[in-house]
Length: 199
Image 1 (tube, rainbow, N blue to C red):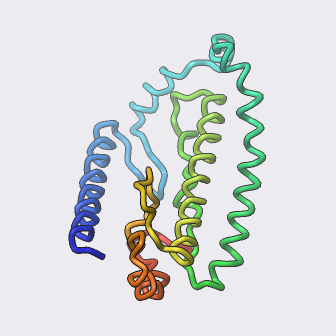
Image 2 (cartoon, helix red, strand yellow):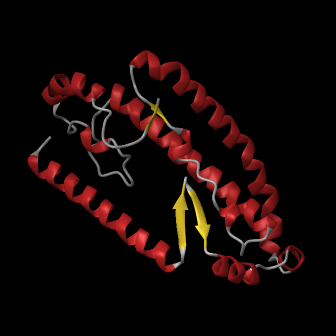
């Protein structure tokens, strides 16, 4: 990898650490802490949150017609999501040990914590859970596919791609055939980078 690219990656990691410090400051400002992956609010804050909650009946009665009409399209999407979840899990469970690829820990991607927010009513919590599942599943699947691509075809694209996955920077440059042939074996083994992996 070119020294300039390595330097940029290190700067990105530094910015990620700086971002985590800022998020910790924001947690202090909002008066909650994280313990065992669970957010704990101070009692005074929880009481204020309960006062902000819209009752379920009021929430439903004041729903916009476009929200009501699109619900029958949104909620059935759970079925293809569940199917994707099952297939991605089976794929990783069967293939990753054969290839020697570390498994992706599902719990690092599927985070369900909105049900602890006292300012959300039951329907809002269900909606948040649905979105958390869908987005978390897509991130989990993206990491599994990224590790697969790193093993089988670690070549960057000729054009810039939006939101490249976490492993993309390790890939060889497009058109650099000798780098691909010389580095493929090492790239296939380079799965360490601080990401948590399933044991």
